[in-house]
Length: 158
Image 1 (cartoon, rainbow, N blue to C red):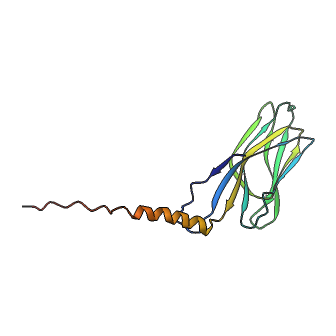
Image 2: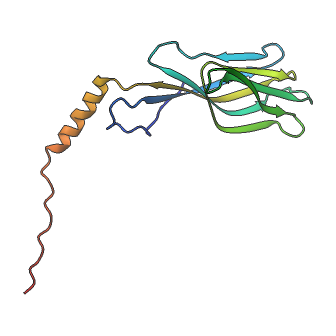
Image 3: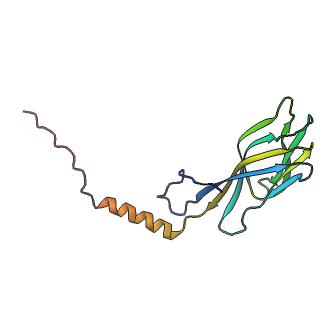
């Protein structure tokens, strides 16, 4: 599994979360028509699924393959939405950009026999612990030991 640290969070802000990114992929077919992404159930961590591409796999038939996702909306209600309708002759792949959903998420092959490959990133957000912050504070203290830069003296007009 690949992991990427998110550099967008400011280390100077106490309590700002850190984000790790892991490669995600699953294959849907008539034999395995759905996949449920849960993430880990630890209290302090939040798991997100960032879908990037949906594409037909090798051996796909000339038929419509409809992929839908089921997740919670902002009111906490489960909602299902089609995200791709693929066909080998005209649209074998869809790029979703950064389509991010909070776990749990179910990806389903609603129509067709596939295979359909879904790829993206598994994002894990965890709060910064105080021990992490104190290490960063130590790094900044070392910088303060340097002598301060003095402003240049202005020449007096005669």
